[in-house]
Image 1 (tube, chains in turn red, orange):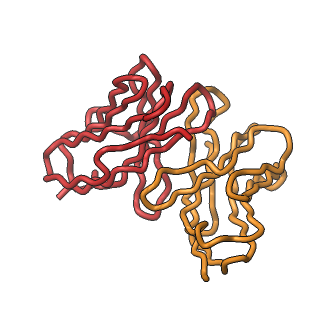
Image 2: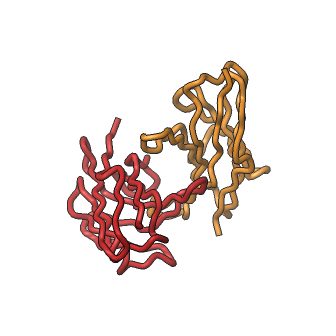
Image 3: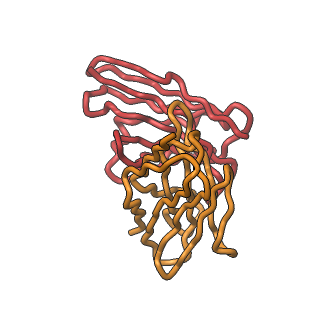
Length: 116
Length: 115
């Protein structure tokens, strides 16, 4: 099946620094990419959606200046958490699909961010 | 607004026993419904989905789910649970009837399997 990787799997940073998380599709080209945030024992919260050739569309309440999403290519998306603070500590998950609509989303394994 | 509720936060079953995980959704039209499984260190994996047609949907790993419009439910079932089924299970509904592909996830149900 389709494989999505995320790097790094874990990152610890100091408050005020920026962190970049990469999400790559290894064996397919992704039309649409999603970024989620998952809190402990909680659901996945969609942060933003990006389609090929378009800027990311952020969900209500998600600060676009804090969470910078770049749909760099058909196989790569990056999430940069700028000026991270302890409340940004969370599990970040990306997913990708090969088409528009409700095609199967292929999920990365997630990145655990801890901000000290 | 669309929403998904998984009433059971944690379920423990014995290996070999049957399993049913509950999912209720709120959506005005015919929903797009999904069940995903999340294992530690791995990305969420699609078990099955319902878009239309036969209300009993077969998925991977021996799972099935039944769409019941009258009850706004999409419960996941497996006749005989294996120890490897221990994981987090998420029900999800398509956020709209358009082509965004956005999903709304339930809170998840943690499945523990006793030997």
